[in-house]
Length: 443
Ligand SMILES: Cc1cc2nc3c(=O)[nH]c(=O)nc-3n(C[C@H](O)[C@H](O)[C@H](O)COP(=O)(O)OP(=O)(O)OC[C@H]3O[C@@H](n4cnc5c(N)ncnc54)[C@H](O)[C@@H]3O)c2cc1C
Image (cartoon, rainbow, N blue to C red; front, side):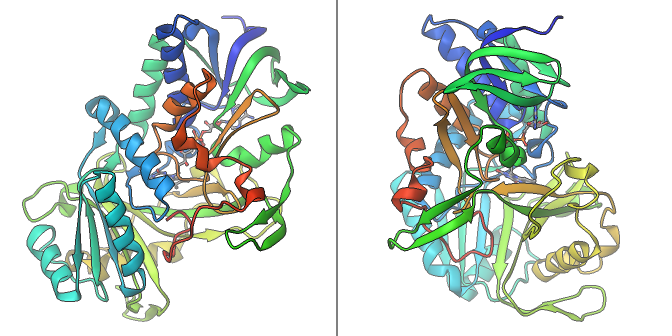
């Protein structure tokens, strides 16, 4: 099929956000009698799921210290539930297992979950937490320095690419054309964006939507947006000249055992486990001390990755120029190495006895990947250059399947309260999202 020279809406990126927006926008156009999916094209330089969405762990949780994130994620969980089976969403729940330094923050998260009717349970006290884990989840639980557990009964995880292919099917059934192997190289800007310059020519358009995940910085440059910005914090202090996009290398991997090995006391799929603790971490290989600092891991049995899959705290990438391409498992720089494997498998053994001698089964294959983070590590959902909607999720976003639904409504002229806290002008106005005491930049 020939490349179009014009499309009313151009969506760049066939990841979670691009696809979700395409589907919901097509539906809005059809239902409101203002057009159809034929008015939309989705462009991806590689393929569906070629970016962060295609390598994500797929965890869906509400455990956020920021009320605005909690409400937004609750909305996304509703969207996952609309087609759980089709999207490969497993609503097994999620557990945030924490040390005393996080107790207060997590208890606030729990209270807010109650207020928004997001079902969860909060367990407090070291003995009570141990008993709860042993009785209800894993009889071999042994993690130390745990004084609270937030057990979210909703959320869980989705089978990575299955959700993306399902979304792509829905997008195409609305009449949207997905064009892969077509790279965006720039924009025709005349006050607003009049067209998209691609590797195969110019496509004129009325409106552009970008869901380009880790390529946020590159597109920011193409649109001539500021590389550095002044940020006002919530106390009114100015932080001049902060980098707009910072990269973190997300650390994930898989233990190559049968996923059944990770099931709960009843032989069922357990909740996703996230543990943060300040207990010293010792090597499961030679008992040497790995760290006395606070550390954190998450994991779940996973049939997509075929094993026990999970991750640990990410590493910031210090260099000024970061090679985003080749991305993901093809990157020579941003995949996890032996240090991650050692720490993560030792952390698994710290948490559950059954993993004490299982480090030898760690899958020695490339995993992990880059994420682009904003100055306060939270998403930016906003319109730039008058008609270019940027969905820059600051690496929070596989779980955020509902953002595309809200963005579609905004494009139709209906501003969404849930998206308002994520506007770009919060940096200038000193309305940042509050910071938690978690060791992860995205909690
Ligand atoms: C290792 C890892 C684990 C993660 N785990 C989780 C998790 O468990 N839960 C969670 O909620 N989030 C997780 N995330 C974050 C989540 O994956 C991302 O926030 C989300 O997938 C971003 O989606 P997106 O649609 O914006 O971008 P992407 O999925 O990255 O898609 C962007 C697309 O844009 C295309 N593109 C780039 N440049 C161009 C161009 N010039 N022209 C045309 N197309 C272009 C790319 O090919 C790509 O397909 C994880 C991220 C990583 C890296």
